[in-house]
Each structure stands twice: as C-alpha cells, then as structure tokens.
Image (cartoon, rainbow, N blue to C red; front, side, top):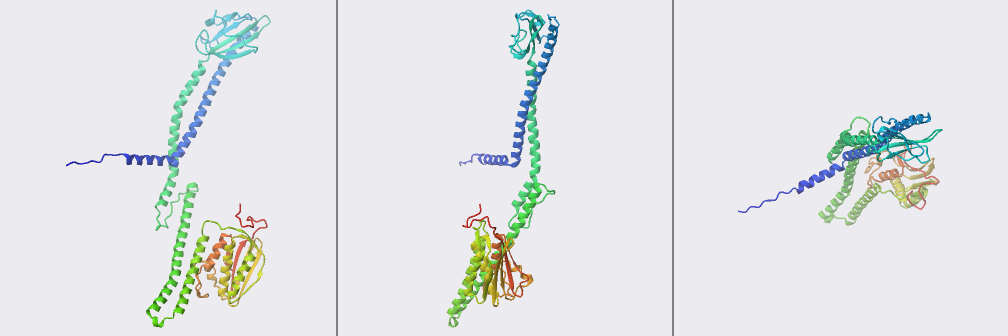
Length: 482
C-alpha cells in the first residue's frame, strides 16, 4: 500500500519569525535604543576626527617650537661672529638635520649626518623664515619638518636649515585612531545595552497599562489600570486613562439607561394600540372604529414625536459642529411666539422681549425657544410670559408660566431625559425629551438653563447664552469662524 507524506515546510515558521522581527524593530524600545546609539555614534566619530586632528596639530606645533628654539641658538652664534661647523641636531640624534648656508649657497656648517652634502633645502622666499614638510632628506626617506630662517649679520647673509623627523606626528595620530576605533564600538555596545535596559524599565508600566486596557471586556467596566506612584508622565498617563474609563463607564451607563427608557416609551403606546385593536377584533359587535382610529393615531403621533426627538438628540451629539452665525435672538423668539399663539389656550405675553444678539445655530436655538414655550403653555393656567434681554456679557431668556410650579427637589431632574413630573404636571403624551434637548443645545452654545427658585407660584425657566460681541467671530452670512 503506497503512502504519501507531506513534505516538511518552514514557510509558516519563517513568516512568524519575520513578523516577530518586524514588530520588534517597530517597538519604541528598539527605536529609542537605535536613535541613541546612532546619535552618540555620530558624535563620537565627529569628536574622534576632531581629536585626531587636534593631536596632530599639537604634536606638529611642539616640533615647530623645538625647531625654532634650535634655530634661535644657531642664530645667536652667527650674530656673535661664530659659524658653527658641527651644530647639534634638534633631536640630539641622527633623525635631526642642521645646515648653515652662506649667501653663495655653500654649506658652511652642518650636522655630522649631512656633512659634505649640498643644501638640504632652498633659500626661503622673501620671508624671514618658513616651515615646510618634505617627503625625504638625504639622511632618511621619512618625512621631515624643516625650518628655514634667513639670518643677516654685519659681515654676511646666512640661511639656517633646521629639520627633524615628522613621523612622530603620523605615529601619534595613528595610535590615537587605533585606540578610538577599538573604544568607540565598545562604548556604543555598552550604551545600547544600558539604553535598552533603561527604556525597557521605563516602558514596563506603559505595557502593563496597555495589557490591562486590552483585557477589559464590555462586562468589566469597573476595572481600572494600575496607577504607579509619583507624578511623572507614566503616572499621569494612568490617571488620564482611568479618568477616560470613568467617562466611558458613565457614558455606557447613560446609554443603557437611555435605550431602556426609549424602549419603554416606545413599548407603551405600541402595547396600548395592540390591546385596543385586539379588543376590537375580539368583540366586533362593540367596536367603535372611529374612536379606535383616533386613539391609534394619537399613539402614532406620540411615537413620531419621540422618534423626532431621539433623532434630534442623536444629531446634536454628533461630532460635526453646527453652522453658527450672528443672529438676532429676539427675532427667533418672536417667530416662535407667533407660531404658538394660534394653537395656545393661554395668553402668551412677549412685551418683555428686547433686542439681543448671539453667535449660534438658528435652527438649534429655535428648537430651544419652541420647547420652552411648549412646556410653559402645557402647564400654564392662564398666562405665559417671555422675557429677553442682554445682561452684561450674556443674553438671558426667561419663560414663565402661572401653573402649579415645580418642587425644589425636581428643579434639576426635569432636564434629564424621559423625566415627567406626573404628580405636579400630568403626562399628556409627551416623552420627556424637550427640556433635555434644551440643555443639550444650550450646552453646545456655551450656555446653561436653570429653574429660577424665585419664580413661584408658577415656574420660571431661565436660559443664558454668551452675548455676541460687536465684532463677533462669526460672519453674518452664516459662515464658520476662521
């Protein structure tokens, strides 16, 4: 029976290793270590080149001083009237050269190693003395450093040539280069190792925070990341992360409550309409189609208002800012008053409305005024009063009704979503989102809304907005600020 075997392949393993290497080289630890080694390496290389050049310059300067001192000694002898026949070399050995040449180019004095040889160098041009480096001299093939100096005496004119081997400059530079070539890689290895360890230790708390955040599930909103002691960047990161998780927790809880409340608000009219229709079908002899249809339409109308309000809230919570412009808020208020008067059973007094300008979204602020008026008209006994005025740097809009008022404990609750005060203000099919939308819109405009505690016996709701300056930041044509 023939058997088949699967050939061994290392492709998946190679891919995993390549991915691991790729992820490793992308890490902050690796990049910081590589950057530190690269920067320090460049600094060391540049510094080493400068150090070698400085040392070569210093050694050559020392040679020049030695040559100059020997030339000074020979010049002193010449000016004293004595021509040194066998002057000593600058180095005291065979590596140095001294020659004294007269005006006719004859060697009148020379060190033992060049005695009888022609002049080792030409006369200096025009200048009193000159330093040169030559490739070789008769005594040696090495490089030499020569000082040629013109000496004028009362009797004659001489040129003194003093030379010594320049190999010491190259040898000292080579020795220093060899030391640096050996030391710099070792220093970079030590630096990279220390940087790797230090950065790893510094990033360990961040990795702990990342792992903790990655492991937090949707049902573990109460978990928080560990916060290290101190007030450094890592501690502040952990604190900021925990604050963000707190906000996410609050937002998730609020969303859950919002969804539950919305589901309840939608389920109630649906249940009522279903029940009425089932009763009509079960007892056709007692059916009143017209009345049933009216009640069903009333429930549909309530659901439609709820859907509109939910959609409005969702739009206003979007990240895209509304288009703002400089607008006359008194025009918006008077337009909404004119809209509600024909359908209102109570009087709406707008004599307290005066001119006021704000920077804002006209549609959003019109919704604010409409919701405040609708709320006041529903709960007023006979009159609703609207006041609008500019006070210092703010615009204050007050809507007052003469209804039963709101208890102190409920003055903040009425701005929450789906809140209806059934005891003092009976439900009439509204969904409890109107005042929540008012607070949402005003908050996005930098304003606020409160219940005036001195508005009794009725209710006085006060909305405050920043007043538009004369040269406001928004153009009157409705464009966004630059």
